[in-house]
Image (cartoon, rainbow, N blue to C red; front, side, top):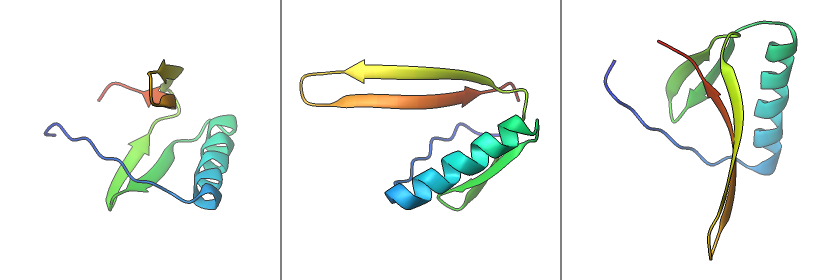
Length: 70
């Protein structure tokens, strides 16, 4: 697979819906599937989890990250 970076903005309601579905999959030890900009992404239940915070002069950013090996 070639290198790929996607980003999509969601409404607050849709973001909550995605997070809730992700949490449900994690609790059930199930894989998570999400479409990002028309591309299907499959996250295995064995993924590693981290939270990243960045603070600059003009902006703060909080990222919930899931990573896994191909």
